[in-house]
Each structure stands twice: as C-alpha cells, then as structure tokens.
Length: 390
Ligand SMILES: [Fe+2]
Ligand SMILES: [Zn+2]
Image 1 (spheres, rainbow, N blue to C red):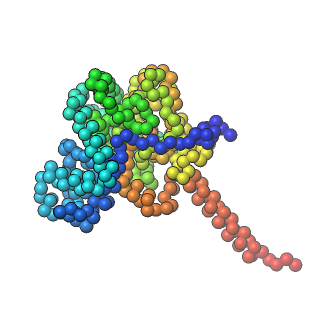
Image 2 (cartoon, protein in one colour; image 1 turned 90 degrees about the vertical axis):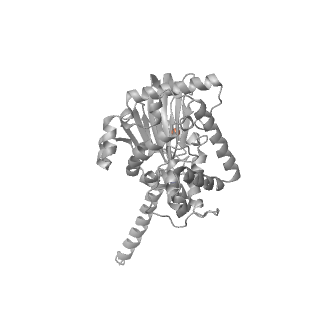
C-alpha cells in the first residue's frame, strides 16, 4: 500500500465552505422559487425569452449580477419600462423575501459588513477593480479565449493529470499590483482593527476579494474567461452554466497558514492561480475526483498528482477533485482562488440520482457492473450453444 493510499484512508476529506458565500448560493436558488412569487406585482410564469437583459454590474447589488440578468425575463411587462435602479430594487426585494428568515438576516448582516468595508477602504490600484483584459492576461491566454474553440484552449492548456488543467494566465505586472493591493488591505485592517472574515473554514489568513469590492471584476473573469473554458472541460459538472463565485486570496508562510489539509471545495470548478512571490514548497497534491458518497474512498495510483506553483500560472479543476497543499517551507506564497458555482447544476443534482459520471469511484463501479453483466450473458450464451454431451 502506498503512503498516498494511507493518506486518503486515514484522513477524512473535508468540504471547505466559504464564509459569506452561502448568500450567493441562496441567491441562485431563489430564482427558481421566485418565478412563483406572490407579490403585489407578480413575476411572469413564462419568461420573455426575446428580452435582452440590462447590465447591472456597475450598480450596488445584494446578489450576483448574473442572477439579476436571468431574473429580468420574468419581470412583469410594466416593470420592464422602469429604470435599472427600480428593476434592481424590485428583484432584490423578491429575492430577499424568498430567503428563510435566518438566511435573510445573515445576508443582511453580510451586506452591511461589505458596505462598511467598501465605503471606508481606499483602494491602492483602482484599475484592478474593472477587469481590463490586456492589463491582466498574457497574450496567449487572451487569444485562446477570443478564438473560443476547443482547439484554441487545448493549444495553451495542458491536462497535467486527468481533470487538472494548467495554463499561463496572469501578467507579472498584474500579479504585482494584486500583491500590493492585498498588502494595502492588510495595512488597513491592522490600522483600523477591522475584524475581517477569512476566506473559508480552513484558511486563517487571506481575504475575501468580493468583500473588498472586487466582486464585479471577478464576475467578469468567471463569465468571460473561465466559463468558456469550463464549458469545454467541465461540462459534466455545470461548467457551461457557472453563475456565481466566491473569490479570495490565501497566504502561506511560516508565520501565516503553513499548509492546507486534504479537502474538496464548495464549488463546481475551482480556479487557483499563484500571484507570487518567492517561496519554497507549497505543492498542491491531487487525489482523484469523488462524489459525496465516495469522498473518503482510497486513491488509485493513476489519480496521484503533485503540482508545483509558478507565479502567473493557473490550475483549473473540479471542486470535487480531492486536494490539499503541502507546507510552504520558506518565503511567502499568495494564491488567488475563484470558486465557480452553477445553481442549475446544483438543482439538477437534487433531482437526478445517477449523476456522478465524473466520480472516479462511481465510474469504476459502473465499469465493473458492465463487465459482470457481460460475463453473465456470455456464460448463458456458451451454455445455450454447447452441444449435448454424448
Ligand atoms: Fe481547495
Ligand atoms: Zn461516486
């Protein structure tokens, strides 16, 4: 038995949740329920599919921009002639009214928390807050996304191990600006003694980028750049319908988080990109993709893969791909993560039983079952055609 096998059997895989991220999940599922809402002005039962939705990303939104864009086609006709602010108010009220009481007050508290940060924090590099592709991405990545074909993606992306895609993504100048902005957050947090929420249940350092006003920029990153790639490589987990995200940075060094235990992410697709700087160690270890039922099953030898971070380089994988990070033994490593989620995939998953073709264990079980059925048929056939013994 290999040490990696032991690692999986002895450790229980954790599902990492993002602080403050459930409001997005709730927002997405609220669409489904909101179609039958009883308000003084009702939503349409049948959507107006001819409608070209407004863009709301420059407004202050309680829920992700794609949720508003999708909900707009259900607005009553008299509401469609209203201005964007009124439409946002109407849709926000409906979505809040469909959150359970506890969730509603939690969402409200989280909104107040975000507003407090955004109205007091002075960004260092304002240009980061609107995604300007030529300031962020290396030309090869930009060209591939512009072409938007499987061939163009395959020309820049290598599948380092099944389901783990690696590619050059961010310009060094962009990484540097992000690192300076993160330093600036931290200085502000220390000076003001503001108690910030950490990115998830496992990282004690780092910050949620969405809470610092980078949510619009990250929405654009997901919609325009990550979703087209995920549509090609992760269609089986809702890659084509990613509609909300949780974006954050994590920091590793001797006096920050050192390593990260074995876990799965609360995402359909995870983008993990190293921003820098100088460090030793910190490799990501991958151990196969699993559904909820099989999350603690043993690793097969062809599922073992270790990845060394390179600043500017991105790794894209399914959230259910089990992984962890080895110790960063010296220096300081900062990574940016974008957990991309699909509300459509999560709704479908609730309705369909046999849903996990992407799970290494489910597909092995299916193969074994097929082989058994084939064997039984073969035996029956051989018996039937065998000539009677003299
Ligand atoms: Fe993770
Ligand atoms: Zn499974």
